[in-house]
Image (tube, rainbow, N blue to C red):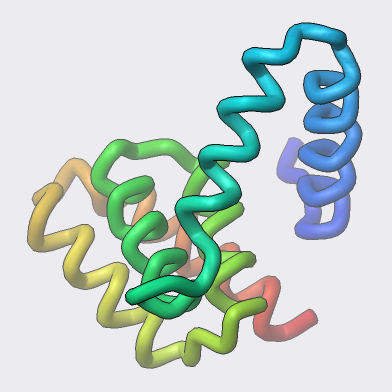
Length: 114
């Protein structure tokens, strides 16, 4: 069964809360480090999210693709910027990225149309 955008966001939020409140501090350290990597710095947050998106597509992680498409759009990425990012991932990763390109395209359309 396919989850909606809102169901996916709710699931991520609920599970992240459980993980971060588990008492195992190393989880919190990693999440903080991950979060810090995507904030504005020498590169704007949008650029970093698009980089994360291309990397996630090449690594073939749909959960990561969802997250970075969502965050890229939240940071102001346009449809054309997403298309170019998808293309970089496709060129770098080759044809094995095509199923993940389909998924990224679907997520992008759902979020932009919401």
